[in-house]
Every structure is written in C-alpha cells, then in structure tokens.
Image (tube, rainbow, N blue to C red):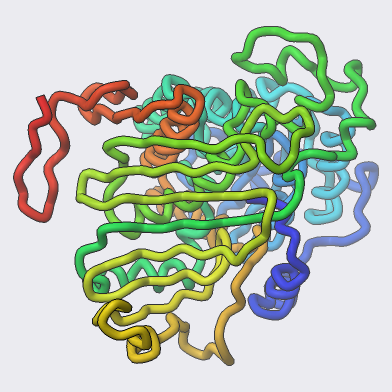
Length: 471
C-alpha cells in the first residue's frame, strides 16, 4: 500500500528506523550529461554469471510511477551495503522515464540507460535483476517476460490478478530456478517477524478466527494530478493495455487504474494482498478453501467501478475463518487480531503497524464484565527498544529489498517467494470474483481452479489429520 498519508508514519521512517542516517545516499547533484552508464568488468556482471561476493549487481527497473520511485529510492539506499547499481530504467510515459533517469543519476553519480519499451531493457545481457512496479494488471505478464529473459526479479504486489497469468508467471520462474521477491514487504520487517515467531510457539492455541479491519477516510486512488498532464503521444497506450482488449486512450484509467475492475480489484489487490499474505505466513495455510465477499460504492460516487466499502470472508483448510473489512468512508481505528483459545495476538493500527500485543484468553464477559482488565498482556518488542513501536509505518523500509539482494548473491529463496505471491494472488482473485459474482467460491488445490461448488475432496485438516470428503 503506497503513499501512506499519516505524518506520524513519515516521522517513524526518519526517527525510528534512522534509515537516512545510517546508509549512504549516493552522489548528489549528478546530471544525465555528467556521466552516462557504460558496462565495464568492474561495475556490472556479465549475463548468466553467478553473483560473487565482490560483483556489483546490475539492476533494471520497469514501471516508475509513485511506487516505482519509492522502490528506486530504497535500492539506492542499499547501493554501498549491497553493492548494487541501477543501470537501466524503463517507463512507457516519457515524463516518468526522464524523471527516473535523472533521479538515478543523482543516486549513483551516472545516468542509467533509459528505454520506453521493456523488451529493450530485458534484452540487455549485463542486467542481472529487474524491479517491476507497473500497474497491477501487468505484474504477472511482465514477470513472465522477465523470467523468460533469464533475469531475477522484485515484483510489486499483488503478483497477479488474473489466475492463468499468475500461474504462467509462477511456473516460468520455477522452471528457471530464479530468485523472485514479491513486494509484500512486511514479511521482512522486524516486528511482524517477531510476531510470526510468537505464533509459531503455539502461544495462541487453536486459532478459529482472524479479523482484519483497515479503514481510511477519502476517495482513495481518485484525483491523480498526472491525469491532466499526460498526452497520448508521450506514451504507448497499446503497450500499457498489455493483455487487455483495446479501448480508446483514457488518462484517468492510465493513472487511476485501481478504480476500474478490468485492471484492478482495488481494495482486494492493494490491501487484502498484504493482510492475507501475513495470515498465510503466520498460520502456515497458503490457500483458502472458500471465499465470499460483499460491499459496494457507498462513500464516493465518483465514477469508480470498484467498491469503496468491502468485506471478505475466507475459510481455510486448517479450520479457521478470516474476516477482512475496509471502509473508505470512515477512518475508525484499524486493527488485526488472531483469536486463539489460549491468547489473542492484536496488531494495533492498519496495514504494516509494528505494534503487536499478546493478550491472555481466560474467562468471558458474561460471567465477569471486568474480565478484560484481568487478562495478562505484553507487547512484542525488540532488544534495545526505547519504548513501544508506533501504530503505523510507511512503505520505505529497507529490509525486504535488502533480503532480495542478499538472496541474489547466495542463490537462495527470499522471504516472499513466487509461491507466496501466487498464494496471496489466489485469495485476492477469489475475493474479487466472489464480489462480482455475488456467491461463494471454492479453491481446488489439485486442479488449481476456482469453482462455484466445493471440490471433491478438501485438504487434510492438521488438527485431526483426516481429509474431509464433501462429495
């Protein structure tokens, strides 16, 4: 979820993580004319080489809008620690491409090569790995093309929003044994990792329900200023459409694509993807058995197609229910809670909040209205914490990108693999399809298909070890 709006979250990046104070910022002031990028034996790997400890990783970047600029900034903060350089950038819109070339010239002291079309970047044999931060409808198709070119990738979430495209991308990556990190960055952040480890100890007991409520007040994704700036002649509209049928150039669709159902599911693609990815990780259950969704456009009747109010219920084979809810018409406090028979894990705040609390589960409110005050609780903290972590964080944390760079060198799988990306994509695709279809949908693990009826045999439930036949 990019462009978080809270000033407190931005303060957290500056003061809490101290990123800017601890990592080099690159050579400020360089211009395109001062130093153009040229591959040399000491600055880039040749195509197909295994990355050595002293080799510089040559990066390419496809799609450099708002989130893309953030990812470029993150990569630049790791340039010395991880020995990387952005050597090529690509964006269909001339303005974005020029901005990306200029910013990377400042970061690295020399300009990257700049392209309009991704095919030209992927043809560069000296580029080892590619960042993909294009609109959601093109994530899977571009990841597949990147894998076919033999390059590792960092791809933004959701990994895909069309099932067959997500499958094809996953399979192409796995066939070539590539290193792909999917942009669900909370898997790499220290507090979610500590919370994950607490869950693995069994501290919660049997979990029967997970509740995720993330709210925001405003016409999210509407009102992008670039809508009034772009001209069709400065981009390639047909290439932007990617696998979608042709339609006349539409600048609102180009930049506000999250509001239009053929290109994004909006809340499901952007927010559920983060929430359900953590559920999959914490609960060790990767695909829902069934999903049903409801919602509508109740707050912002501004021509959007996707709902501004959305709720999904996802049932999982291990025997628990996930409830996900978002409203864009009210900023009531957000939270996530994992509800077990022994304890509750509460994440106080919205997506990415690092403030986790474990609360003992004992008694009930019927017998004792004051039972909540008698339940023991503790916050999940890290060694050296000066106090409680904040209840929000921006999208500029470095750990996820750093993990990817480390895995490129070791040829190990990163924290958010292509398999993990496929799993969260399935959950989000099912939630979106259930909303539009108005009925409960089911996942068949054997055929990897979305059905409108239960599959013949459900996956085994680990609590009793016996498969449940629903034939």
